[in-house]
Image (cartoon, rainbow, N blue to C red; front, side, top):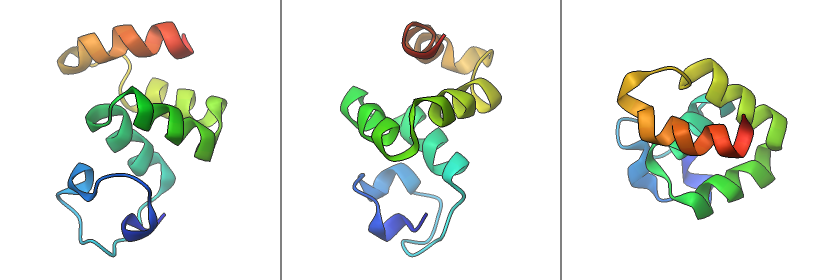
Length: 78
């Protein structure tokens, strides 16, 4: 997924070149961490509920620094 073609603020991907082509799992993780609920819903429409939930479970669930985010995502995808 090319950052410059995504419908999300580019500052969510601050550590990458603006034209970087990232795996969808990295894009989904950045949206989950930096995005608001509208961004998360939009990402779910792009990837599908199961794939976005899978990314959360694989990359973010259980990490203490994301405790509040994980509580919200547990309600949505748990």
